[in-house]
Image (tube, rainbow over all chains, first blue to last red):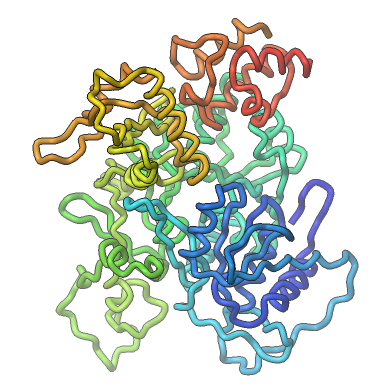
Length: 531
Length: 72
């Protein structure tokens, strides 16, 4: 890993990870990590896994009530962070060990006690034995937006990251010559698409402040100077990159061979713009996946050496399933994803888990019995190499995404079955924001909608005061002060991507015939009042 | 870059005609992604390469125009 002029070699990282695991002690349970954009967070991630623990990133920029809620929901008993960081009572704050000195002497690694044992963890902190970890043991906890106002902790097993990391190495074609830019925030799962395939391939993971400064001029110069070969970008950011390259007549540095995008729908106009840039040797790979299905489940080359003609691009496809993925499409068009990379569920939320993870019969051939004499029987549930085994595929995640299949087999995203939105590539349930706003003592009712601003989805909120003041009697300064108060309240409680850019105080919301709040109708009635 | 020129950039990026010298880019619906367009336009016009934090600091055409003058 490199960051500006400092480099951490694989040998140093290995020693750093062991030191971290030793400090945590064996089986530390869930370990919260106050993240930073640096190699430190990678050492904390790998050190936690090596100790047999469960990694849970916590963004130190979040307001304290949010951090506290996430730590409580994760069940962590230890948090790795800077000295002085706030942690709930009963939680131990641990400082990450310093990275080892460059040029240190390496000691020979102990051999596994039994050559037949497959080890997921690294040698344990004592140095004698190993931390035994099974594929079903949890590896990390990440949060997704929930409609009730509480983020849902997704628990991902170690086997899932093993199978997906292997699949992504193959998909990306990562080699030791690659230099992968660490661009994604270390608080979401996308960063693992950068970190894990790179570090399991002998490639270099590059950190650089100019990746996140907001200046694309600086970013492009840095990509050139650092000889970056792989970029993994949120689709919305890639849209801006295409706009910049076109408007500024700027060139993508020639070192780049692969650009991975994902997180929301690719704009056909931006794709046409990219194709006009003449970057025919650069792979442009569109990807799709959910936190609950571990990183990427579907992918397709949109441009470059591997791209093939598929169909009209008025809607850009999300791709075909990766080899480990089992997919099903329901009659309503919902995409269901099965296979060995599914999350274990939502921690301590059996109802939410049952709602989204469905047990279904094997669609292919439920009546086909297992032939005990045939070791290659595809229905043998004990065959660990066969992802289509009934025993494995009986469990599916309901993605909530409606899809259709093009003639060439690639899936096209048709929309959501629920009200979830993508704000800057992050899944947001408007119900979560509504529940947070409803926590303000002066708010009676609230509707949150996604509003497009220059092609980007932003959040707008319509708020009805709790007092029974008649609409006409609401003085203008009261409504303005309430909007400002609610905004301040939100900034103290939730991350920035959940804060609407505009809060409008209105006399009442629009309701549907069945009496439910009509979010779109409320927006239509009051949009002109919102300035 | 004077206030009017910065206001024009805001208008173009946000696709909203009602931008005044004191309109806050983020209150008008701007986000960190649209901010890159403002920063690119400022760099193209003036050669000054501001960062996202500068726009957070100076989110109105008035304030940003001053910031550009200081950095030039």
